[in-house]
Length: 417
Image (cartoon, rainbow, N blue to C red):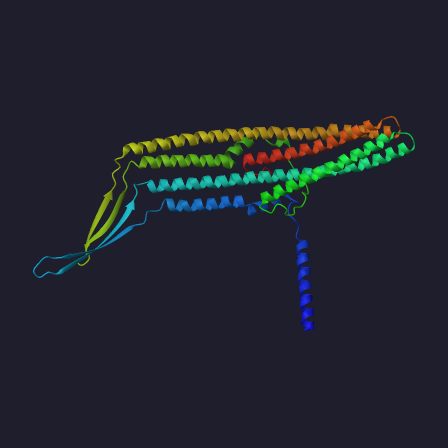
């Protein structure tokens, strides 16, 4: 019994060790944008619901063009003949009928259902484009937060060094105690900013998990690097506008609605013509006698039919106007996002090539001047703040370019890299 107990204990320990090893080998998603997009495509519940709606719409297409079920009628008649030799007479009847629409109506009903399926598929694609753009934007914000944290920590380390310099000068009687206190106050401000950055990171991680269809507190890896962006010169506005007209799912959905309205209008015009039913009936099964028949409904309510035709004409005009309005709005948004993307890249280039080197030179000069007693501590702090603001401006411009580029891809309807 003791041996068996030890064996079970060893087995449990091995299983636990294997589970911990497997768990340690699993890495949290979030390091790469492609991984996040693939995870969202398979796990986001809203997108999954829209895919199921598209599947349901496809099934409705098959039902729309089908004939109605035939109707079978069974009759049994019993009669008593009033004769001196009264006897019982029985008669059995069978009737089979099939309703048939007028020529072309079934095809038009199938077209209406098929175009409705195209609309549902386009709406699902539009939902995915929107979801992908939000994931890209959140990823860019997380990447910005990580880089901004490194900048703030660098400034914090710098302020620790400046405090040592101020303390040494104060000990030697070369600087007032106020310089040391200012350095400590600046460090506290940097620590407070780090807390704000941590709060923003957690909020962004919760948003990303929501977009991925995961629990809000599920672990996420830090972004490894930002997406490479094309130069502004490579983004031709006219070419992108043409691609948006062709690939944007919202425009495609409006096109499908126009085709649906056209088929509905044609179907309403076909309702001027009657539907009919054909069938066979036995007058007496005992003798095997059969009859055939044709029934036709009479479309005499012309006023209601004309109203239905006018309704479909109005719906077609509305669909055409809505398609034009949607295209105009998307193209206007595309031009706006292109302008914002260009501004963000130009702002980053200006910061990197001019502002940042200038502020860094100013900080070096102020630091050397403070050590030699030619510059006061307030000037040194101001130079440090200018460097920090320039670096954060560079990061903000880069993140803004990422956000604008994600919006451009959403409007175009496809990846541009």
